[in-house]
Image (cartoon, rainbow, N blue to C red; front, side):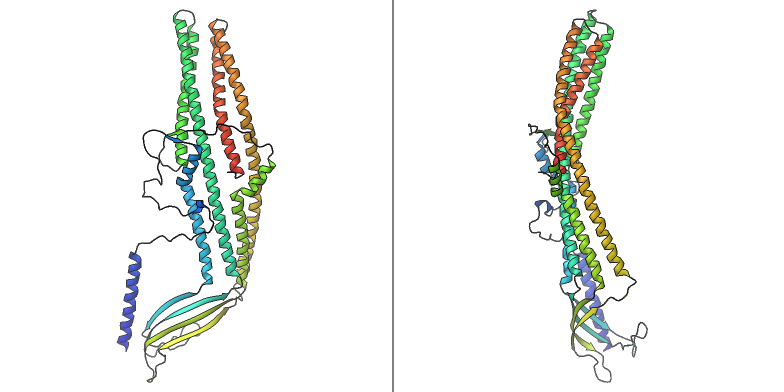
Length: 474
């Protein structure tokens, strides 16, 4: 009999070892995403990751700059930027937490295989109050447990997980809005630096012409060497401006490439399709209301607060008992005999109900409930603070947009006046009525005005994008 029991033990051990080896050698497969009814396309599961060293998507490398509008840039960034994938995956992971909590609603079933060869006449003597006889046996069976009620704790845990999943969805949407704002800023910064590069190129060309003219006059003894020095100094200054603008344009393209999700700097032919500049709204109160209603960050924090409330209730419910139904069934194909009588029947089974009643555990459960309640209050204060900060950000963005819009008209007047002043100064210098200092000052003012005007348009575009982001407008 003992030999049969030992053979059964060896068989069970070998079977379990083989199963463990097969499980370890099998490649892990990613689980299919849990379908979300009515979810945003942004929150759909991402495509399979590309091999290391390759970007998710690449523009065709034809050698020529790729034509790109701000709308195309936003679509490309939402597809390629890794931050989008990060928060999308976190959102999908949060949805799985809801499924984890719902698992408590379903029964737990597990199988057992047991083989025992005890020392003859042995009993379990130490440990608690047990003193049973250990019989030689081999058996297998199933055990089932099903929760009947825990007086609302599981319901509150499921609600907590569901609300936190919604908060993660809102965080993903907020990340998308932030990425689009970063794209707009990088796009218009690149256009601005390109416009400044064009101004610098025109300035170099114009000052080169003036320097050549003054050099010719000096060679004909009509101007002094001081005039030539001033003209060459202004020309060198414009060349430095050109070098800086070229560097800034390439840096802006590098930033744009990074925001679009590319590891290498790409060359783009940036196209501004929005030719009409509309003034910002007259009133800011309506914009504040839109922001408080539309911003996904507020919705996310609100979901977090509601989840904290449900979690506090779940922690409170730990003080209540939980009721569980139990059932076992199995067969004992082999057992030893005592005085010719087997202590076990071949088949066994039992059902029962177990009630766990918490009585005292060192005030652990009341402390956990109190902790959860305090954290819920903190989340409520964070929500209030977030609303105040967003309202202030909206007002600040609105004022910046108004200032940027007014700067366009003022900088245009600045250009007109400096052009007139330069033409007059050049005429006076040609007639010998003024010095090179006056002409140089007119050149510097004209360049400054052109720079201000070239930048004002795109600064207002950026201010518009920031205002749209603050009120979560499309």
